[in-house]
Length: 95
Image (tube, rainbow, N blue to C red):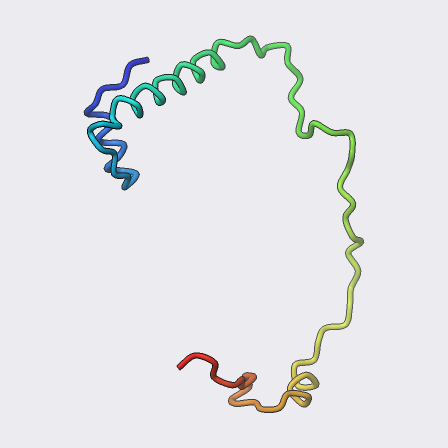
């Protein structure tokens, strides 16, 4: 598949990339190579291919979903050195 230099400039503008005129040929060549690879992939026979969601036989180890006691905000704020309007007040570090 061939890409025009006008399309290269449009892609550069849309992606907010600055491509110098010297590099347009290189970008054009590389994009054409990528599109050629995509064309090859589209021609691959996939009718008898089994779709896999995972390439491994391992399953994820997930923690059990257990109900736990919620943190009491008032208890935590009782331990805080300073509170203002329900928020923790911390020392200013940036002037």
